[in-house]
Image (cartoon, rainbow, N blue to C red):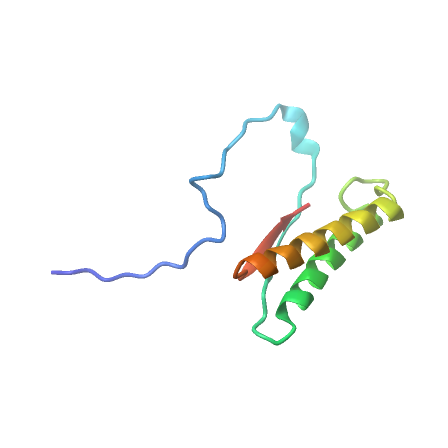
Amino acid sequence: QTKISKQVESPLNYELSEVKQFPLSFDSLKFDVQFFQVQEQEDGSSAHAASISGHIAKTFSSGSVSEPTSVGAEVALNMSASAHATTMNSHSNNMVEGTIVIT
């Protein structure tokens, strides 16, 4: 008897992911993970890059990651622009279905 099954593919490659042990002091760090899926529209890559860069700009300019202060507006803007450029570059060289952003 043949068993047929199907599983959803994970966006993370766990074979290439390394688990690291950190000292207890790392327990106080705050992390946020967001998954941005590419929409099947004409302007999907631009909208995808804009969503990612907007999330990064908002996160790092509001101080929600490194409480009680943020990294500063200029640094947050540079990080956002870099993420936008990197995402657009990825779209031009690859078929991107989604992006995981860890802040």
